[in-house]
Image (tube, rainbow, N blue to C red; front, side, top):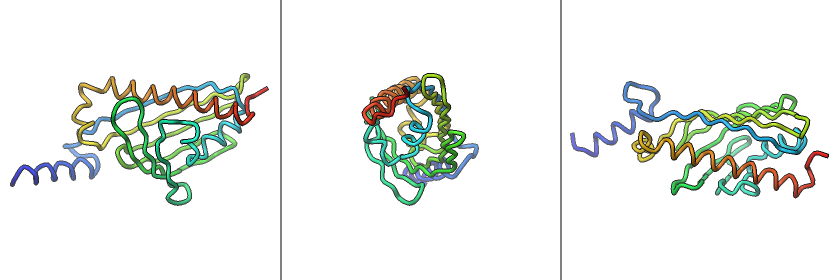
Length: 174
């Protein structure tokens, strides 16, 4: 068996689901945002995934594929791009919950919980993913801190963009 066949077999094994050869790094990212806007306005904005590039500059491309399904490409500070398909799993405006599955360069789930607060809304974000990009997986043992920092930078920019977007739309809480 030549080297290319071994590489191909390893890639197939790594992408076919959990096995003894599953070396994909797992990440859990959490953020808490305070937004001086009504909970329903924050929820409405976060639920309109195809509008993310208007206010969140790290979302380079968002294409609607079908109802509740989007192909996205994001890039933060570090020089790599993550592409994935986001599939909506749960939308509950009354409880302020948005939940989706992602599949592509990252695989896993994303959840937003948006709650009213005295100053507007508090937004909790959680992302539980594995990476499927070979070079990122190879670098993960040494560069996990950089990937975590990069995600944090993206989330900070998202909060800044969301606040500005809502302010521009006149949707800040009185």
